[in-house]
Image (cartoon, rainbow, N blue to C red):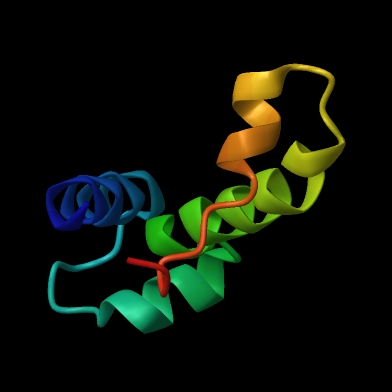
Amino acid sequence: MAMLQRVQNEFLKIAAHVPRYIPTQELHRELQQPMLMDVVRDMAEKFCATAPESTDLLISVLGDYDPEKP
């Protein structure tokens, strides 16, 4: 995930024509682009919220995932 985030940061800097020393948080804030981890987290939360309602048994079981359970 970290490697993908670095790639995204570099592409944003190239596209925005900003120097390499601009902090990543500032870059994302100015361009109104979410960090990759935030996007993945939002997608996972949405999936876990809707998966139990799925008619597909495998997907509905995946929605019950709890990282605290052994």
